[in-house]
Image (cartoon, rainbow, N blue to C red; front, side, top):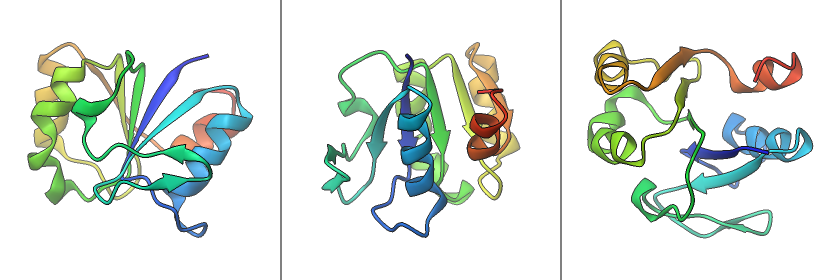
Length: 120
């Protein structure tokens, strides 16, 4: 079981971040929703900032626009996940380089597909 932070988590069922949280649970992973509004998604409390996470995070799956990454890149580096997945539409070569320079693996991929194909 791995701990996965969902950066840009959403309580809206039509959003991919919401679907990701559901699939992570089905596949035996522990999701940690990170949403600037906080709150709760399907009984799981959200944190507002990556720095509030209370356990080591294996993977961060990104569902925020690349323009919003500058505000969170330092927090992301500080929690030192093993990898970061930039889902389609969130890719950022600038931030990818910053993460890779710190030894963090980066994938430009769809978390939902990786889970469905047992490649997560």
